[in-house]
Amino acid sequence: MVEPDVVVVPAGDALLGDPPRTEHVNVFAIARKPVSVGEYAMFVDATRHEPPIGWDEKRRGADRALEGVSWADAVAYCRWLTIGTGRIYRLPDEREWEKAARAQGTLEELGVLREWTNSWQEGGRVLRTGAEPAARVFASDDLAHVGFRIVRGMTGR
Image (cartoon, rainbow, N blue to C red; front, side, top):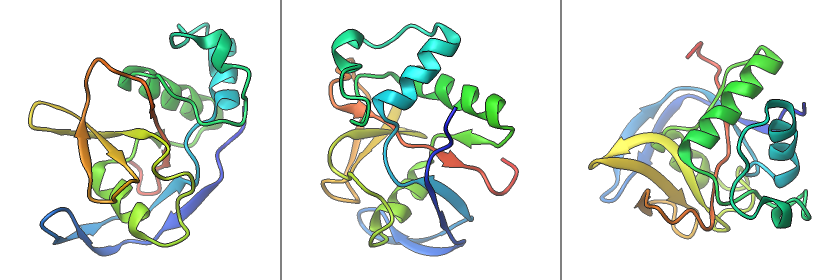
């Protein structure tokens, strides 16, 4: 089990959303990159979790960002990593994701995927995309180009 390379984002106010508004965000550590195929393969092998559609083809690029996973798959991965490391891992909420995305040099591979968050708005799970940091999309049945990056909790939640 490999813990992700994370960057600590300090607590403080951030200008978020569209239209922009000031919101306070607690300290957190977010993975620089989305979960990779290789990282997810360790989880699938260790837990026998049902792999995403087309898994045999996806496994060929271990360093590539994983895609085609549901929100439940992402949460299961976070739970497995939490149990295995003794640290709290979870999906970022929408405010954390946007604050990290707006900070220059914090997140890598932005815009490659739509990424799961742990936020729920307007009757659906929120995905964020790096194409534009304030861009919000909602979950659908189409999981193509849907992945996730994780947060290591630093406030006990």
